[in-house]
Image 1 (cartoon, rainbow, N blue to C red):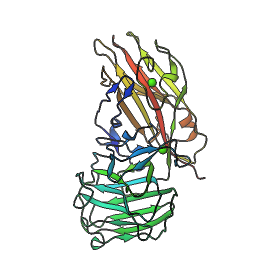
Image 2: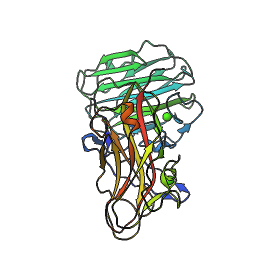
Image 3: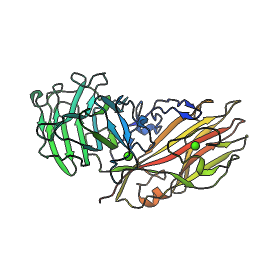
Image 4: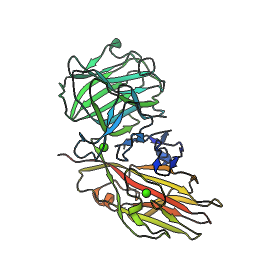
Length: 384
Ligand SMILES: [Ca+2]
Ligand SMILES: [Ca+2]
């Protein structure tokens, strides 16, 4: 199975009462997946906030009017500058899948590119980029850095249409002679190689053009040049489950979009007893494949002596948790974990997905654990 690039860095969310500041999701803490330092390999914008990405172009914003069926409630409209979907990578090869549409195939846009991590989106910092050519209405790959076609574009053959969602998949191997590939829906539209070795891929970026509307959604990012899986991303919200904690608000206090962390908007474990609060989540109606699942949590701790706070999950008879995590006393910290396999170790399927529970755990000690928000993002494929 292709590995997803996950995230390591710990970034605390500073949530102010009534107005939550929303940083990058930053703690995808499965050690086997931990290769990045910010962002997440699954980005569907279903938190209702652009900051699921590592950095956001100043002109980018979320849109709810042209969302692709099967892709939840939000998509991202890119501005003219670059947004970093996933930063902190250290990969000799990279791939990405996303949904994309443009209002005008006659307007050039550099829609996706892998870089060395520099500030610019042009060579020498960009290793390879995949762009819409406004003259032909086709996509092309280009790079003067890694000896791709003598620095000239390599064009795909698919003539694109305005206002149409496409599934775009790209793959790049930085080694000399490595592949550069792009798929438009089922079609392998660009299939070439480059002659020079590139540097380690540090991030994956997207951009649009202020003279057209370029929408993105459903990002899956991998660390090989293999063909990414088809898929889209939806959110499954908490919708039930046992109420075990003292502040018995149940799932209704952790299911909102955008997340609210104020008083009365959280569940709290008070006192020193071991306790776990797990939430059922909405069922997904149909999927021919479940590629991966990202669980997300927003938590903080109470005042007093530090104690043992964890986020937790349950599936297929297997209960597990994060182990002790460091939580802020003021404001909330965001956590995420990507599960390529179900927690029971089996490949995901609908039955396992719909049996998943997530929540939080207070192991011991005199300090309260707060959970403000929890959700599940599913990367799935279902042909329409
Ligand atoms: Ca979405
Ligand atoms: Ca809440």
